[in-house]
Image 1 (tube, helix red, strand yellow):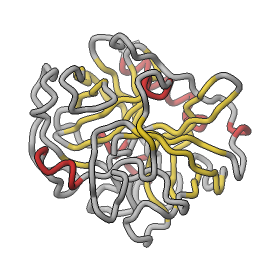
Image 2 (spheres, rainbow, N blue to C red):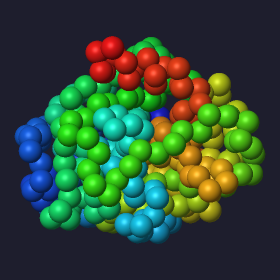
Image 3 (cartoon, rainbow, N blue to C red):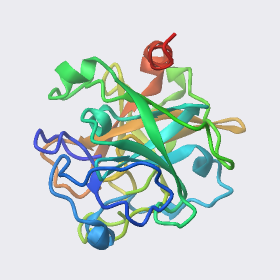
Image 4 (cartoon, helix red, strand yellow):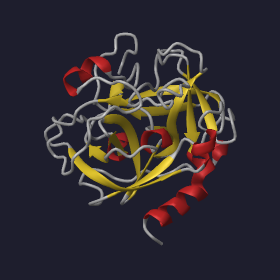
Length: 277
């Protein structure tokens, strides 16, 4: 997640080598993606993740459905929504340089499991609206091979946008840094609570307050925003970008997330397309 920038494709992707993820069964390129990112050896100093957050434990329901997404060496986050499907940001997959998902709380762990993405559908609005301030269509669906690994599960989607109210609490998650100023650490799944600033920022997007020092940052793009509904933690949003566009790149202002409720019909159609139905 980042502030609006054509040069970076508005992304909060971060670059690294996957040499430490030995479970990868396919090759990913190491060419530049959406900017100049650090190599794996300097990744822990040059990446960004959920700022002001806490580590997500293996037993936490968030860890069951949240995965890392690697595209040509660039890092994003994604959420499993079916046995072979994950939702992420359009800007994370608009260029396919070898996309894979990594299932792990720590992407550098020896037991991290990586699988190949076999198909991608980017929301069509992204191609025409990505330079707009609102309603960018920053959402995509990917299909992956091999099914959901043991210990992971699909997340339920929020179906009623009326549940999103100003002042409400939302939990964000992603693999990105704790401090954008010093650019330290990356690769571990973290979470943080934020407040809804404007549930109707646009027809398809929601605005969160990150001024308390907690929220999404680089590397968290495409990652989940959850809302508690009874006993269930429901996926309500996908990390898009920072706001306002001219704010310092410190991830402690505001953040814009794509609302999944606005794309429920599109997600169903995209799933059928990816499965050839």
